[in-house]
Length: 113
Image (tube, rainbow, N blue to C red; front, side, top):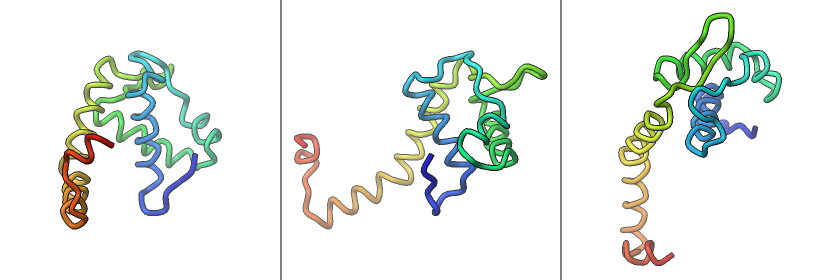
């Protein structure tokens, strides 16, 4: 995993797990790697992974079966999709539209491309 220095690592881990859910690589009720397994696999402290899992659990995207591990929630894909759409529309799209206006790019050009 290539980490971006402008975004906290625990959020980047959340993003990666959410991307796997949206792509279908992780299906509802799939077990995800333990905190230690995941941390060792990507070379980060297990505490960082735990912080990611806690956030995803709080968001209802994963859940913990005590003593068994973490699993993808049945409605995780819908939650991730809704959350990421809102994030895009509120934070990313305004910048894209502003840049298009500055460059004189018509929305029809974008659709053609």
